[in-house]
Amino acid sequence: MTAKLCRVSNTPLKQVLDFGKQPLGNGFLEKKDFANEYFFPMSVGFSEVSMMFQLLEQPNPEIMFHDHYAFYSSTSGFMANHFKQFAEEVINSGYLSKTSPFVIELGCNDGIMLKNFASKGIQHLGIEPSLNVAKEANKHGVRTRSEFFSEELAETIVKEEGQIDAFLAANVMCHIPDILGVVKGIKKLLKPTGVVMFEDPYLGDVIAKTSYDQIYDEHVFLFSALSIKYLFGLCDMELIDLQPQKTHGGSMRYVLAHKGAYPVKNSVPEILAKEMAQGLDKLETFDKFRESVEQSKIDLVNLLKDLKAKGKKVVGYAATSKSTTVLNYCGIGPDLIEYICDTTPIKQGKLSPGMHIPVVPYETFAANSPDYAFLLAWNHAEEIMGKEKKYVESGGKWIIHVPKVQVL
Ligand code: TYD
Image 1: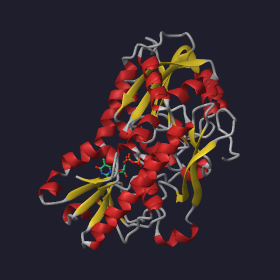
Image 2: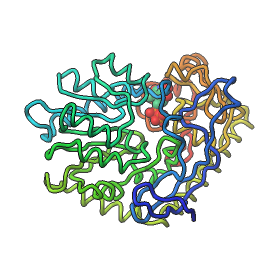
Image 3: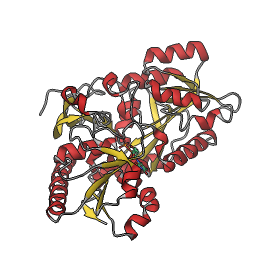
Image 4: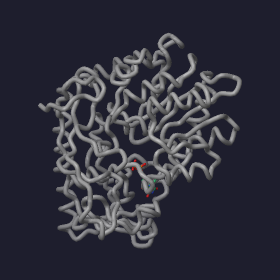
C-alpha cells in the first residue's frame, strides 16, 4: 500500500512492482558524468478506479526530454514504414474534413509521421519539446513548436490557427504525467467532427508477454482500453475504434471523438470484454505479473552466468531505452555483456545508463561476431533477424527474454 495518488482519478494507488533504483532509460553517458548520474526509485502502481497502470514517481520531464534527447524515431525501417501507413490511414479515414484539414501531432520527434502530411501539402503542426529532434523534423518540411503541450497551448493554437480535424500521437501520450490536462486541451482543440488517434505500448501485451521492460522513466502510464475509456470519459469523449498494432512488441491505437459524433465500431466492445477477461481491471492480475517478472529475472541471470562460466562471448544488440530496466533490475553489467551495439550515432561511444556497458557502433558487431547476442530490441526481432541471417549461419545465437527467456 502507498499513499501516492492516481494522476487521473486522484484516488490512492496500490503498488504492484518495485524495481529499486533506476537511471533514465535514455540516459546514455560518458565516464566523466558517472558522479552526477541521475537515479530515481522506480515502482509501479494500479488504480482500481481509473484502471491506470502508472509509475509512482517520475523524474521531471525536463530531465528526460531536452535538447540532446537520444531517441530518433527514424532509426528503424519498419517504424518509418509503420508511420507512413498510419498517416495514410488517417488521410483515408473519412474523419478529416474534405477542405483544408488541419492535423496536429504531439511529440512528432524527427518528423517520421508528419512528413507524410507535409509532402501532401496538408496543414499540420508538430509539437515537440526536444529541440534537437524537432530541428530534424524541420529538415523534412515539418512545421513544429518546441513546447510541452498544455490546455493553455491548446487555447493559443485555437486562437491563432483555429480548431483541428485530428490530434495524433504515437508513443507519446503514455509519457505525460498530467494526461488529464492534455485531454482537456484536446477537447478544446478538436472541431465537433474532430478525432484523436494515438497509439502506445499496450498493457494487455505487457501482461501477456511479461515484457516488463516497457516500464521505464518515460512511460509514466501503460494504457489499456479500459483506462483510456475512463480518462476521455472525464471530458465527455468516447472510444469509437480500437486497432491493435504490432509495434513496440504490442501496441494499441485508440480512436476517440466527442461523445455521439460517430458510431462506435465493434472493436470497442470486443476489446473491452477481452480486457475484462484478462483481468486488466483487477489488482490480482498484477500480483501474478510480479511473480512472472521475478521468474524472468532469475532465468535471465542464470542463463548469462552459465554462458560466462562456459567462456562464451555475449553482447547486447540495440541500446534501447527498454533495456535499461532489464539490465539494471537484473544487475547485468559489462562482466556479463561485453558491449551493446547500436546504430544511433549519439549513443555510440557512451555507456549504458546505470550498468555502464559500452555502446559501440553496429560495425563492431558485424566485424567480430559474438557467440550470443542478447536482443534488447526484441520488438524489432523480425526486422533484425531478417538482416542478420549471416550471423546465425556462422554459428551465432540469439538470446531473447520476451515472452520468456530463451536461446533461439
Ligand atoms: P526501440 O525498440 O524503438 O527502442 P526503445 O526501447 O528505446 O523504444 O529500438 C530503437 C533502438 O534500437 C535504437 O537505439 C536503435 C536500435 N536499433 C539498432 O541498433 N539496430 C536495428 O536494426 C534496430 C531496428 C534498432
